[in-house]
Length: 201
Image 1 (tube, rainbow, N blue to C red):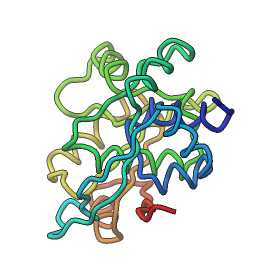
Image 2 (image 1 turned 180 degrees about the horizontal axis):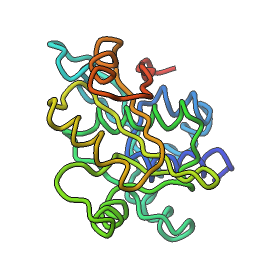
Image 3 (image 1 turned 180 degrees about the vertical axis):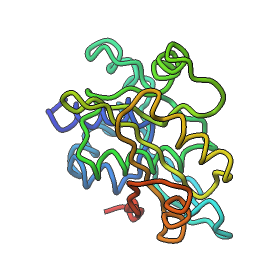
């Protein structure tokens, strides 16, 4: 049965691409996650996860992804083209998901992936400066960026400079206070330190 919570979970994943099972349960309820998995709309797989990009060790974390059926549901019934991150970018997708949730942003008000890249090109953007996601809040546009600790100084500065091609406001997420401080030294004004929940409830 597709309850409103299951539908919202599918829409979250269509936008975010991935989240931890603990994020899904916290955001939409454990029963929604169980129902979505039992209904074949999502899959839960365990992946090795680094707490930050520079961490030496990895921890096994259950990650939730849309199944083929879930992607088809998002396309057919919601008119949404699901974002599917490559496996090497799952930690980044989980971070963007946490940043969006922390800010209380509804996926229906945002764009990312190929749609955002097309907007970026029309605005005259080039290179790797395209933000991770773009939202509209009333009459204000908001760009989201997440740095899991892998951006070089040059990449971060390009992201910081170019985000304002599309948005009036830019909010970054980072996995540690040290990384947040590094971003602030580069000129980032708004940055949140995020710790996505990793433990399956």
